[in-house]
Length: 178
Image 1 (cartoon, one colour):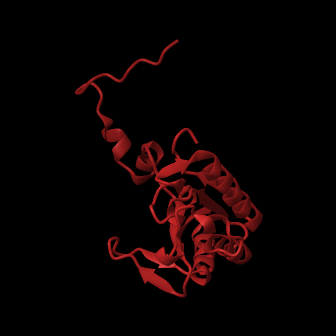
Image 2: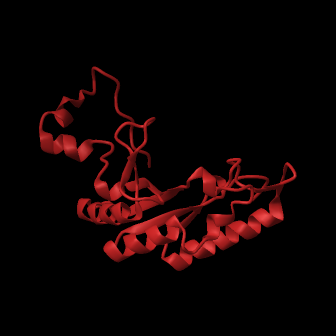
Image 3: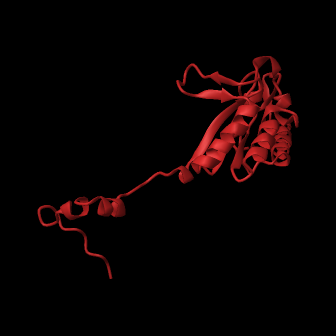
């Protein structure tokens, strides 16, 4: 048995479902609540906050500020935060060597955020592009991306993030079938 379709106007008049607030709330299509959101933030290695000039109102946060933001997320009812690193260019290289540093900004931020608000889920990006001087998601040698070396580095990075306490690892590396 199928449900008959609504008759076309003027035979169907939907004024009934718009006449009172309570019925409008019942029949509306979508409602976005804080519990539906993931807060995306960029964490830097220094102190305080750094405004992102190209995105007014957006700031890079220090580890300490990220921990405060985790508490704020919890208090607002936001269930998870996705964190991304901002690495000083002087620390980057062609192999993304510091991507799996257990003392790096991401594991320190994860630990600080979980200590401050353990009920907030922390998501980390498994990718090398923030750590490479060329911006690609791969270890580069002699102008070529080395897939096997890249996979090894990504595994190291993911393990480090998990050991730091990340709840979700989100591999965004999408090069060459990885």
